[in-house]
Image (cartoon, rainbow, N blue to C red):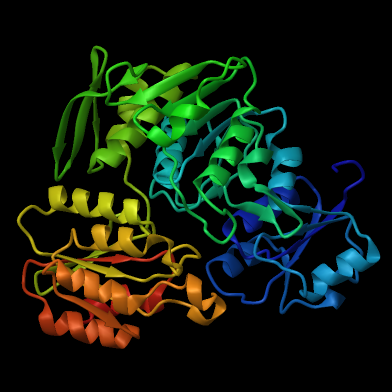
Length: 460
């Protein structure tokens, strides 16, 4: 793939990872161009600052310069004019994970963070531990760690830390992305059913993780959550070392003496006590995985703790956006029932005694479907007041597969909690403004922009 490549064109360049890879290639002396449909800051500014030619909208003419290689983004599908031209002209093309593998990961020590929940937090914390220790790692993370100010960076360091997503690679490669990342150390935080648009059931996801585990070399390490029952059948492997982390007896790396508070968490591993400025049991597991991985890679407990002390969190992960009239507005990326439930539990610790709102947008390809019809009731009813927004793009899903919002409301109201299904952001903001009290905490759960609802809530 690399041989003879002097120019690369990115279809869908405005994604964070795509733009970061494009900039890194340009720094290597390769001519880089890119195209996208919707071009806006911050990525348009990022590309302009690096003088990367950006074309919009998608058009066959964007390939007139005949690039040596075309990178086709995960969001691109058949019918895209540039994609059609690439196939018709038989141009050399690849996915972003393939590009990363061949241009940036091969020859490096790849540390991959996987699992249904906690990938972004764990990868961010791990990258900061290595950065704080002077190791200058490359990283690719599906969020923006406050300490690092960007979600992706590609360096000459031997270390490459990457969030390994089980979602498919591209329209022409339906394997999970993480199968391209050449794992040396693989962290599996947990495993639940998700991505109902590409996985038929839990067994299909387990099969993909089994394929991933097979790629770990004999001098590598599989670090797995020993408390996760859905992983147990996957860990009986002989080709590489396996360590289990968790709270249960028998874990190779076990957290003991757990103390949770609104300011952070405290736990011991062996004779060393770690303190993290993150709230909730889920974050303790995330930090436990990071400590186990960093120890394996040669860092000391003191180095790890020093990084923990200075970690400032990640945007959109229990991020406090502001306060108005004594009401605190929190932004969280949670879009899976387990993630929502864990965040609510953590918010109870962070804001004890305060009334908690859960404002949820069913936007992901899974929560728009009825696979979590009952699980969403259990998760959302852990809050005191619930608002559910209109189900996004419901017309794109078969009627028998759709989430039923009316049933969701009936089930939530049967728990005794006030719940409302409101069709637009303005209605939600008006409802919350009318019903809120001083001291309330309003947590917005969405994996999208949600119409700028956070700023609108803060304007009252």
